[in-house]
Structures are given as structure tokens and as C-alpha cells.
Length: 181
Image (cartoon, rainbow, N blue to C red; front, side, top):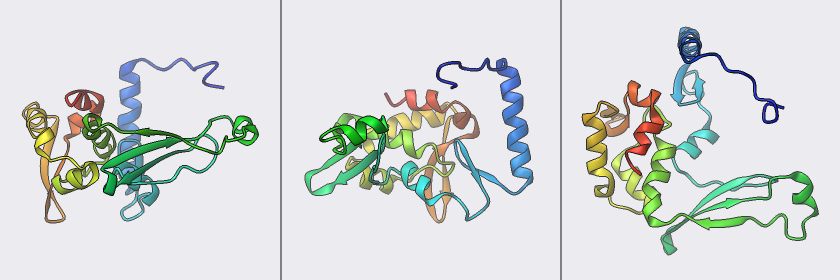
């Protein structure tokens, strides 16, 4: 319904007030924002979603499903996508097959960052290297540039250095990601 008749949104300052009040309400009830669009009580975060945002692998099953698979022996990362409409999915001869697209090497760091920077805790250097197959040096200068702008930070999380968006960077995450394109 909203696709065909999108509602009129409030002006920017009203949207910001709604977001600020909602955040305060949730934090006041012991929920914390662990991901750009998700809150949870401590130790109650969605494991399913944490896997997505950690650039983990998952299978897409059913109409419209997406998946991501890492093939380390082939140094490949692929994304899969199933036919979206259920009628097409069930009626197509090969409708249950997935479209397969390899993530090119030059796009891996941005793909990784689009996912992991959604998490408040961000990522660490070894996660980047393990999940992308790239050396951290590929993004080190751009990370440093974002730190200088006050949009990213390096903090200690569970005895490891974690790279994440600052509070301001989190609010303007698309701008942070634009720095890596």
C-alpha cells in the first residue's frame, strides 16, 4: 500500500525529534541500539541479524530470498537472489534456482562496510581481512580520513580494537560509506 500511495512524512526537524524521543524511550526501558535500525535488551540481540551485519554467510530460501556465500578455496564471495513474486517463483520451471552474482574484489570492502558499520560495535581488522580476503591496508587511509572528520573511531571492545562509526557518523552513515566509494 505504501509503495503505491506513500504517506507524507513530517518535516526534517519533526522526524529528528521523533527519533530522539523514541531512542530515549527505548534506552529508558533498558533497550540499547546495537544496529542502525534495531534495539534489544542486553544479550537479546537477533543472532540472525547479527550474522547479516557481520558479513556472514546465509542461504536465501523462498520467493524473494537473498543469500551470501563465501567460497574461500576459490577466493570468491557470491550473492544469490530468488525470483521475487511468489506466483513466478512457484510457476517458473527453474524458478527456485537463484540468480548468482560474484562480488568483485574492488567492491568487497564497501560491501563489508555497508554491513558491519550498521553495528554499533563495528568490526576489527582481522574480521575485515577474514571476511573480505583483502588486506586492511586497502581501507586504512580512508578509515583514518573518516576518523579525522570525527565520523569513525577506534575503541577497545572485548580486548580488541574495534573500528566503528561515532555517534555523528552513525547518524550520517551513508556519508561515511560514501568515503569508501
